[in-house]
Length: 92
Ligand SMILES: [Zn+2]
Image (cartoon, rainbow, N blue to C red; front, side, top):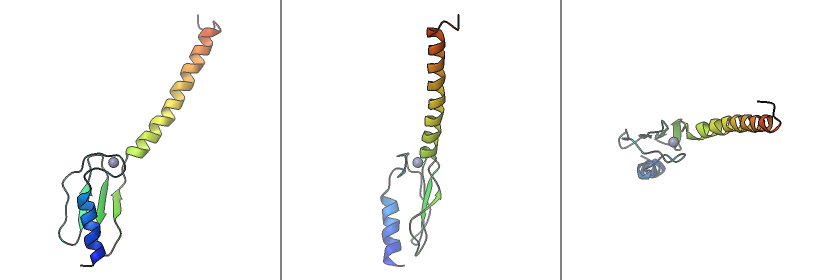
């Protein structure tokens, strides 16, 4: 096995939390030549011989955070509109 694959497997083996969101690591799969590391958030990182560290399933954390931010903009705009309506006496 090439040295870089060994180093990449060692690197993945050293990761204890999802590199994106910090979720806990689950039980890794693989042998001497490859590794597949799942995390409790759903992300899966892997190494195959001669290939760079890859992501089989991306961490949903950043996308969930982005969705929450978009939704918060709607909620806050709605609250501002309601407050303005009350201030103007239009919601009596
Ligand atoms: Zn994650």
